Every structure is written in structure tokens, then in C-alpha cells.
Amino acid sequence: MTHPPHVNTTEWAVAQHHQAELDALTAQLADHEAKKEHDPSAACGDCALDRDQVPEPETDLAHRPTPRHRPASRRRSRGR
Image (cartoon, rainbow, N blue to C red; front, top):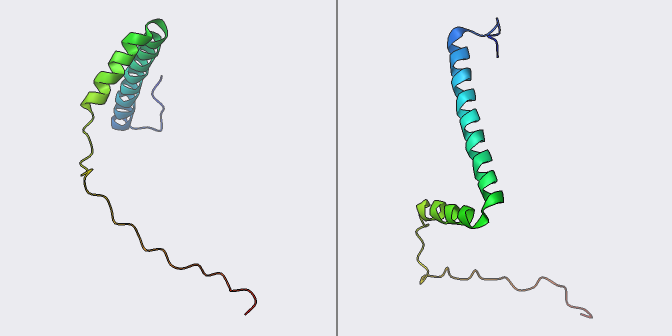
């Protein structure tokens, strides 16, 4: 890519840096997709490793929220 004349040097350097990061991430994704196609069991192992790195949400399973009170039906009575 050539440097456009309307973009200053600093902005161009930042744009080039972001493009390089995007290219690296795209290459990682392509490698992962190729691995999944050739060896699905290895790809599943990678997913398990990725899942283990995600922190579990802090929830108390013993505590259940109290049910909300449902208002009585608002139907009109017939024949009255």
C-alpha cells in the first residue's frame, strides 16, 4: 500500500501497524481453520484449552432468585 498524500505520517504509521496486526490475526485464524479441517480431534483439544482459560462467572447455584408475583388475570368476566 502506498502512502496517500492526504494522510499524515503518524496516522499512516498507526494504520500500517493496525493492518499488520489484522494480517497476523487473519493468518492465525486461517491456520486454526486448516487444522480443524485436517485433524478435528486436535482442534477440539485446542477449544478445550481455550475454554479452560475463560473464567467462570461467579454465581451461587444454591441461591435461586425469588419468583416474581404474577398479577391476576385482567380478563373481563362474561355475563356480568
